[in-house]
Length: 257
Ligand SMILES: [Zn+2]
Image (cartoon, rainbow, N blue to C red; front, side):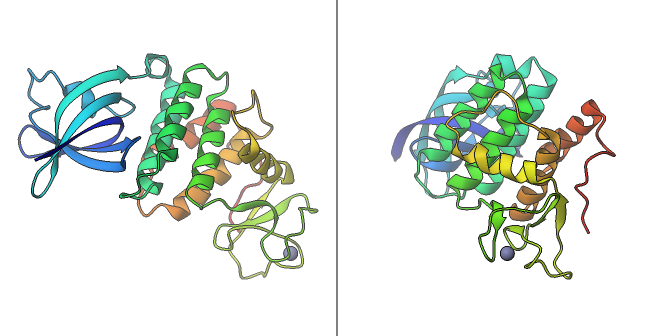
């Protein structure tokens, strides 16, 4: 049997059999990897912590004939600074959900692992978790080749002139006044939001603040919902909580037309 040691972040977990779990990890060495953790749902299990999303651990995985199993696990961190704060936890669980939805299995690129680890570190200390979340999602979209053209028309590449501007998830970005067709499903967005998202991609770390972050979060939620092939309940809950907190549910003009 083949045994490998990996650095892993727990993304998702599923119950399996009577006492096992199937865990989806994002690893530094082997990308997204699914492995069984035997017996971790038993009351006396010493490895129950491994199944908690956001856990970072060094794991040993053994490759069986039909599946992989975790044979050893040693915790590295579980981000206590995130878990003690509702907003930070909401942002982090959403980001983890998005990595699970958008990073394909079978790619050994260390980029997604490094990005998620850095983003979770930001969530522990950033004064505005939503800004760290926007940065993390923007970087994830860039890494996976899914980044829309935020601040220029997808047809003629002209930088945004209109405000509010048009954005189309199906077209993959902004559409100028000359190039949107009335049939295209599109959103009306403040130009500052699109320009802000384009600038965020260029940054090595999240900025301290960002204008119209809640409106940007709503747009980003729409973009990732379109790309993910599954429901995104943690992301929906996180973006909804922002609007409740800021009282901006009815302000802003991000409505589907
Ligand atoms: Zn155009």
